[in-house]
Length: 232
Image: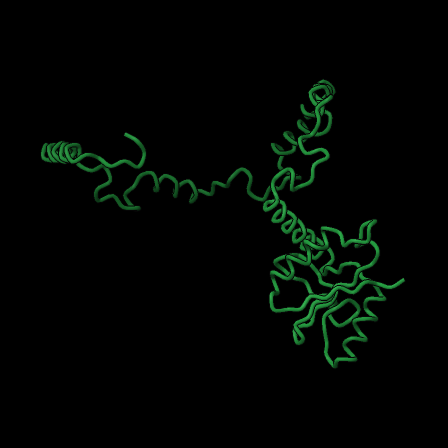
């Protein structure tokens, strides 16, 4: 019978008759009227603990537990089978001449556009969380000239936005792992300050910045998005 399939009515009736005949003949359920006080298995176990038996590894650690120390020494360093020279040579020979499946390919070419977008998002968030765990706070690199521009903007329009060198610094978009250069919830405004590194040799904004802007605008559809090109 396949897993999840139901018994036929004829089979159920046969089981009923068979069990009924067994009980009528005097057969008893093995655990009927059995309690914790009467069950010899529980009594035996309890008795062993009452006698003061202590588990062999109570109070032991990796440093002072002899069985673990023996295993650790047996598999450490040169004793580890994976570290033997012949094993390493076999691994080296098997990989010799093999070309990684993703060599020279972008993430989009390897796993598709949608999955690549999601993978990059998760990687960004993971990096931010790792930095927070190690240093307690995560701050991206920032441009002092950009901060001067944003400060001037706030003073001119009598408002207060999030940007580096101001208050708590740049605002983090948790679900994306992005830190916009400037975001103002009162004005519903997001600004990005672009240095030369954000443009290709033809002066066009790089694709990763276009994609970043698109994702941020999808998260904040009611906000105006403005790009400021740094003057040199």
